[in-house]
Image 1 (cartoon, rainbow, N blue to C red):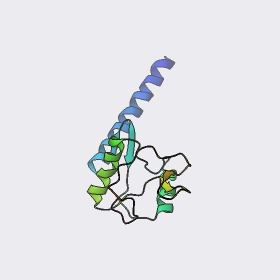
Image 2 (cartoon, rainbow, N blue to C red):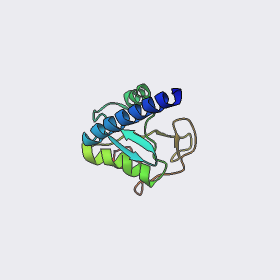
Image 3 (cartoon, helix red, strand yellow):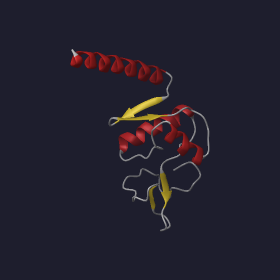
Image 4 (cartoon, helix red, strand yellow):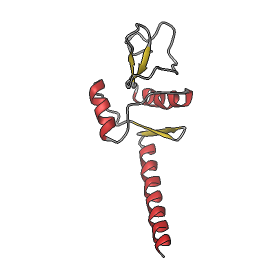
Length: 121
């Protein structure tokens, strides 16, 4: 009986999460890649505020690690017609970049002579 009750609760939660994800997709607030959910509230903010909002939501600022994740972020850039902050920073070596936690950047998809910091990377 206990197993059945837990199964029912899990099924109800899965159903509710599915409905909520559907509403967010309809409102262009989330997209998915490789099992990760990428979300945006569509509002403009500075980098530090963006990092904080992501933490408050239980996530982290987007850092594309492959073409699919890059496309998921690009979805928001195109939809909101704006730039996106990424969880990447310049390392101590000029022209080299790393994740915010200091791990070297492995994947990038920048245009030639980028990043320039002008939002066209």
